[in-house]
Amino acid sequence: MDRGVAMNKMLSKWIPVSERSTSLALVYSGMYLGSVTGLGFSPMLIHQFSIPLAPLEVYGFCYGLNMHIAIGWQIMQSIGFLGPAFFLSQLSRVKTPAMAVLCMACSQ
Image (cartoon, rainbow, N blue to C red):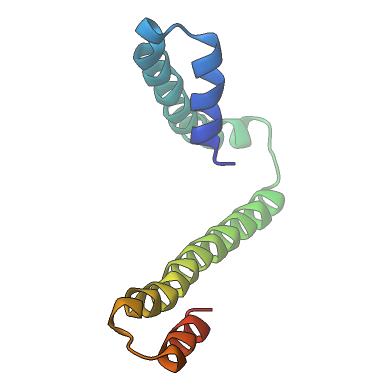
């Protein structure tokens, strides 16, 4: 489940309807503010506590690789839906049972 959907669902159970938009704005603003703050303080903390950079570089590489895979997966999934959508949209133009079977087979 996407984090945004889970957050909306959780807040919808806890927060009254009249306060829901304000609470969602605060939650999402806080998430982004926390990310920006963490990125801002990271260099200072790394320098002050002499944290070795090798584990951070490996983590950054793995995170970047994971993001590329996730984006590629989303693109391939979107392209994968185009073929079935096209063939199923052609069913209204089909005149024979054989062509209907062919369109259904191609949409798989």
